[in-house]
Image (cartoon, rainbow, N blue to C red; front, side):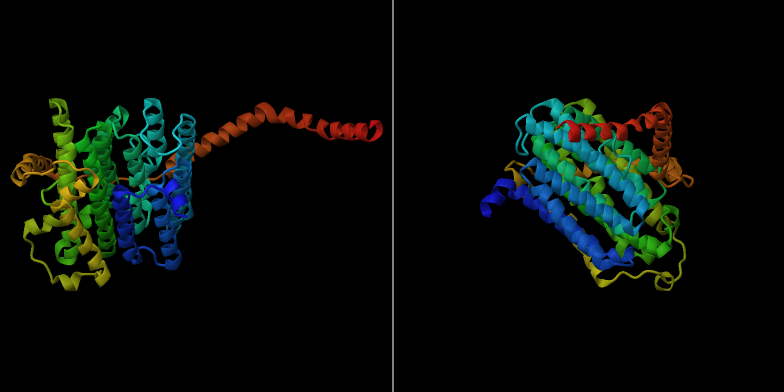
Length: 480
């Protein structure tokens, strides 16, 4: 039995770190499931256990086909979780994942045919690019990210936390294994993700949509680190998978608390949030601070490694500065409208208890507290995690990091002040309905065209088939 496990699964320090992180994040989302999962909670928890088993297969698998089986289990289990929102969304998500599986299966068969019987570094650029596309549909790589904002905007809060916190990371975990020496395609797509997702997050007023586009932007940093092929940036991507998973899980869970409190997802409606949801607001501030790369938090270590790992010229330095500025802009914009606006206005308020509608339970306090502690722990002891993976000299200077952050935080504050914190009118919520309606209309037209072109004449020719079979049977019985 142990030999079979060794042949098909690779158990090393990196996979163990990812496996433990995924289990922890899933357990934390399950603890707050009561916010959105009102019925059949036992079935929902069972799906979560199947999902855990599935992503562990993906993380630890040595062989391509086992990885594909695990990934399909992830797709099916998460699709079933979306049934709590409705069959329409679950079906749309499953179709998108099925399309990604088709591309991935084709790429895997070509990899096996090229001699890569196990999951290992791929040398051929064309095969790397094909696998990037196959994995990218499931991990919302740029160009194949179209499904992420609509699904996040409509999915139940704990399912959004699962999808953003860990499901989309599985593709990047696989990239780490097959592209250790970098990829120009992944590097370019990473920068496109950072800027596209950041701009869309900056212009969003729906909190869940903002978090969805923020996920696309932050995943771009992971793609940049892997695509660069630089050892330090590669390790930064590993840390950022963990850092982003922790921060985004906390942000989606607190998003559920704010929705329950205000009955709205519009960031302008979160009035007196600090008084009414103090613990949730503290978690939001720390999580966004980590995404901005504030020192002492997990996101600082990961972004420090990625930025300084590929800081090989003025062009990349400018791009990375703009990317940091963009992250600070959309994070500070939400913190202003969602939390600090009323505090800065110094308004007289009623008692927070009298106005509070949603009270966090003890296990919800505990979940958010655990995430805050982990963000600080990974921030303070990130170098220990890095040395477990690879023994390199990684130490950062707090003063240098502090001044680096100030360098893009101050311009971000100034820009927000000039543009009135980007007060934007309400927008339409992203939806896959428009895309699927267009596809359905096209398929309907195509079907009618083929029917008129072929079938009307062909159906009369089908009448010859029974006659042909009759003569064939007669020949067999009479002449043989």
